[in-house]
Length: 398
Image 1 (cartoon, rainbow, N blue to C red):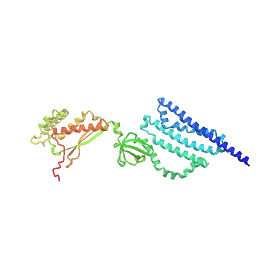
Image 2: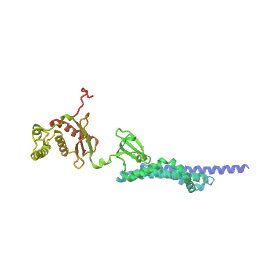
Image 3: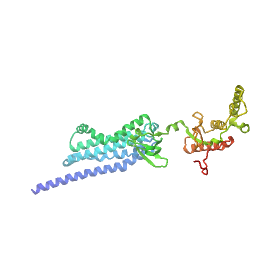
Image 4: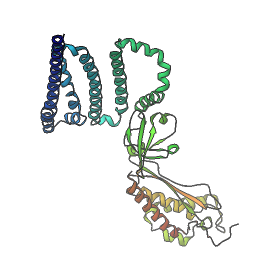
């Protein structure tokens, strides 16, 4: 009896010794691959001029592939430890499934990063698709792992999931909505990374910095970061300023309030003062000729300025602004250019609106162009006998 116990004990010691030796060899193999082979590969990649190998390194694709080496060594040495064959075989398979899921996820991330270096990525981002594919791989891998643990066919588990479709749709409702939204955003080219968008419902007013499966991240101009669910871009109205950048012109739409009491007919003194203004020479010459012809045709009396046609200071000023804008070096002449009256208001005067487009879309430059235009317009008003409307706080307007 003692001999049998001693023999069994010796056999267990031998089996455990083989097991520890196998595990030790697997650890050594992993250490050599991780600390020696992998750094050499990374060093070689750094010397190449291509970008894709650097992105593979950045997303640790090769490092995670090295995780398979211990599993390969143990799988190869399983016949040496028959006592632990079933346990080790199942454990190694579980380990390999997990590692493969991690490797595929890294490969997907690396592929998306490589794709983002292409010009087309600006128009057709793939990050959301990559996240969806990673989710699918993780779910499928989880099914295989559960099937291995339960000793059942993974395809049987997949077929049984069909009965849980309603539950899964409830659980992944936001994911499905975001996936559909992502398809429509990409198909209709609604937003891109770098677009300036406004979405007042969520306090968004800034540049898109990231588009993923579930969220769109926007950096507002005050440097705060907002995350908006992707599917909200199909439910909530938003403004995309991309068209402005593509057109290369930024709209100026601003009014000057004219004091209504300063609007009058132009007399000869005012005409004499303005006839030497370069931007008005053609206009005044043409208008005066039309007035003379009208008076000769209809025999208007000159006893009152209300008889026949007359030039007004506001109309002449409007013509001057238009000619000034036509000759301005930073106003786009191929886009809409209008100088117009808006509805007068007893408490605000006559709004004289300038509607045109600056040729530079950069915020600071655009503001400088707009300010220069209105500085000149305000300074020119007294030459036409016009005043800006400015409510006197000392006057009781009740």
